[in-house]
Image: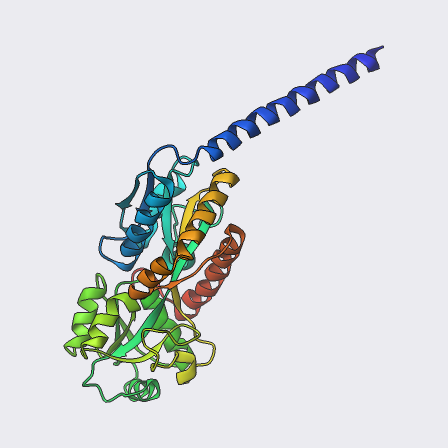
Length: 333
């Protein structure tokens, strides 16, 4: 008798649990089907007018058209992108607050910063990769280096004295220089600036001999003849500079340093919402006009599933972690 009562109680408990699960699942499904029902915010963890900001605003406009709901961009710069990323990591997991993540926020910073305010893996749900940007190795046109090999020879002739500029400590441009120095076995000095603009200015006026920069901000100066490109950091040549070799082609096999950008949502965002965002972004990126717009901005459109994007982030953290440790780079150097 006691056993029978126990079994009946267990059955009722299981039935209640199943019913509750259906209610919760039904509520989540209904929310996903009606998504979005209000404005969406994309947080850009860097200042306005940079590559990340330009891409976010271009994407926001297209998402606005696709969803019929306002999609606004909010700049929350600071700490190499960590401040803006942390805002999204702790936002409600409903798909209405998104991050335009970068190689800095989700590739470099997890190893570079000793005290991270968020976990790049556990605190986010990868949504969709948007694009990849090559960095460009450039020198002052008056420098006696018409190739990467000639630049390496100049640097080796002045150990400890030859300098390279970057947009700041811990940026992908700084780490591109550190990877270059490690692979070419150079003893060179990093000179950090507060942004690409002042760094570019000092390379153009000859204060610093060379630097790596993102293609979008470098391209106008290259076209104007104010900077000489020696190599691009992607694994293949880029359409904007078809005659410029890759760093690997120019003499350092295996070198690749790519700046990437993609949408992230807070962890525990409903899977249906993530999948809808992913399919919408991928559809936008398949449009010929949008693809050309990104190419004009110096960006290679790129798409991934949420799962592929998640694996990409993990591999980037591993890759840049090795560069940080090998080079000894810190946020203070």
